[in-house]
Image 1 (cartoon, rainbow, N blue to C red):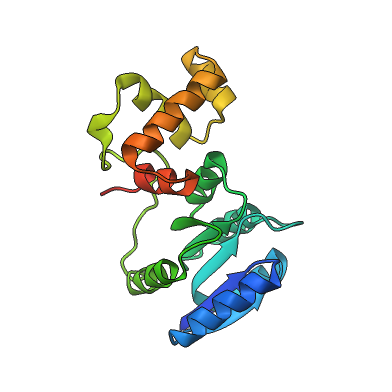
Image 2: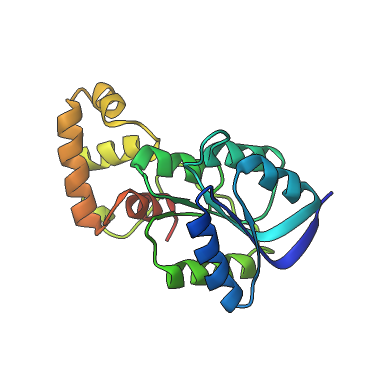
Length: 203
């Protein structure tokens, strides 16, 4: 069984510039940071030394971040994981959240906000919470959506692509896109990560 190290943050990203930048920022905030260039080396290390928090790129070659998330989930790891990506889309963000990521950040991200979330996550580690994998029962702006927009949003939250959502709802993928754009505007979501964060987290 791995030993928990309460101030350790593991950064898993194949881009050395991202690893270096996050290591510098987090070290300045008092965290011990270990960087990994690929998923397998991180998974091996985490078996022996459990970090307090993980920042994980979902777009790595070979073993992807989503694969790593599934392995962590299967091993019942309790370390909070923040997924990051430079090529995020809604299905990917949904996948990351459903597979156990606490939050999802698109690159380039606000370093200060990420550090704050890491601190919050570590502080709450001893208060177990289940990660919702479907639409939250209430979220900001829910009352602004039309019944059809809510149906589209249900499909998005389930991880459906525009094509799959359109097939289920009997509308074209282009119409799904239009609804999605209106939903994002009404909910104040700037990107895929924002939308997933708003609608998959209870408020």
